[in-house]
Length: 252
Image 1: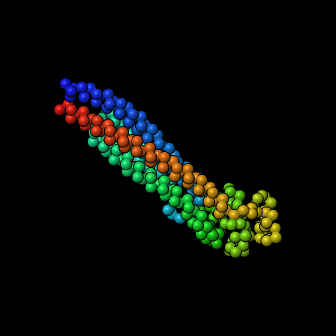
Image 2: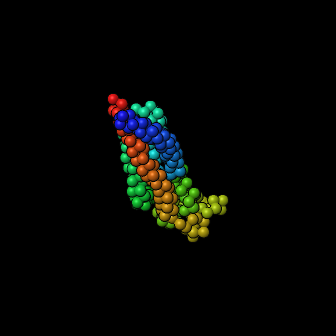
Image 3: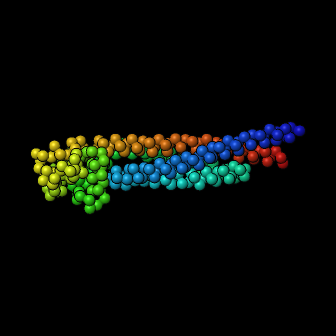
């Protein structure tokens, strides 16, 4: 009699856990879509900056894109496992959630750590790019033009950084530094006395650092939030699997 009573108590618990887990899994699936979108956004919006940083920086958006894709697939699997009420599938779902949690946690930590390495990395790479700058022939030179034009800056610390470059001796300061490109002639950009009245005075180092730190902060913050959200799913999947197992044991 007691066993029958316990079964009657267990079934509503299982139904309740299934409902909660299905709701969670749908939200989890949606976070995968968000991570995928953030990864693509990070890749597109930070591409010009990543081209002047070290190679490790370029991996962050790809990690988010890959993780988001896996979450979408895993969320679909989680819905199927919950509806079927399969204990081994639920345990597998919990295990995959744990792995994704660890990956996202690492991505978030890397994002926060990378924020502190941006300044030194960008300074060294930007200086090297200025020395080898050749207009629009290669992607790094084009990245410099885009940054200077978009952020309205010139050089690393200021416009005088261009004075010792090979490009300056040949053509002067790049037109991307001009406050008004239509009023900047090549002769003006070679004339040291006229340059201060034609170009942006502020260097790009501080502006790029601010832009990347703010955007990487968004990427890392979302990654960390999604990672912590996984803990709920791990707990729910384990509870449901255990309740189903107990119910099957009591029926025997």
